[in-house]
Image (tube, rainbow, N blue to C red; front, side):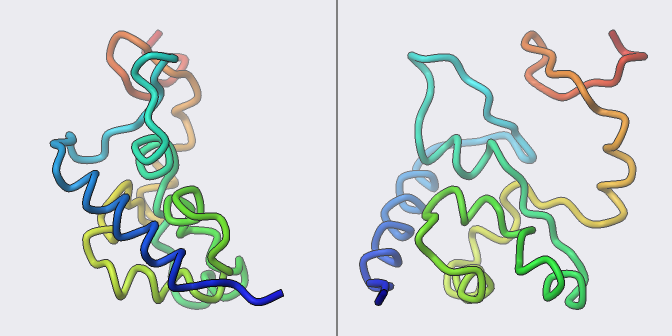
Length: 123
């Protein structure tokens, strides 16, 4: 099956252009209800860019580039790093390093008032 990467790249360009025209809080998470839900916002801000070391990227088939996968799931795993290279504005969207991820393990509940993940202790 041959993928039309040109169409996928155009879809990403349009989504990035749409998102760049809006203002988002850094490290914002998307978890909106029906009326406020937006496909591109949910794709990029509802998942993370798990910025892993190169070896782990290879072992996990670039699973860390999850926000781009949600934006356009037709892009094969081996092309995801190229998307980040071609669209540098996507690199920092929802970026989470390996070290930062260890600190997030305790965040298990969604607080709708604060619009962020919280721990059981915070509740």
